[in-house]
Image (cartoon, rainbow, N blue to C red; front, side, top):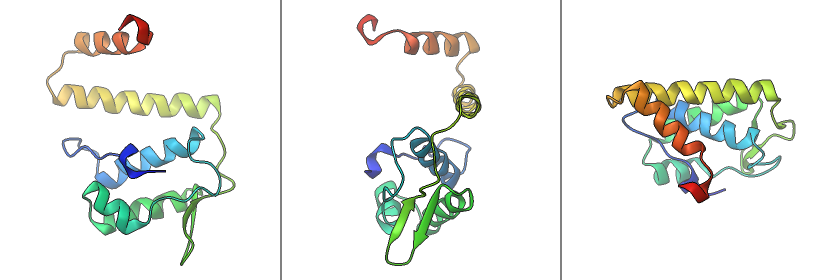
Length: 130
């Protein structure tokens, strides 16, 4: 897994550790990161994203508390063997959370609800039609 697939939006009101936690949890839940895959070292990820080391450490602690990763001194942080793909209900709940965050961000930018709907409709079109 490479850090460029992760990003923190500084204009988002969600704290950086939570943005990062959600992204990593999504990668794990979707199977992009599988059991025993190693997450980037704390210092490397903090440097890559321009975050404080404590911010990334908090993210990893939260993921560990949720049972998604395990950390061992000298062994790094790895996706837990028990971290399985999510159920359809969990996927819908996650999608709802992401949609709510998107709408919140759009409203902060001053985008109307009609424009939000239009953008989502455009995003749902097959790539060939775009």
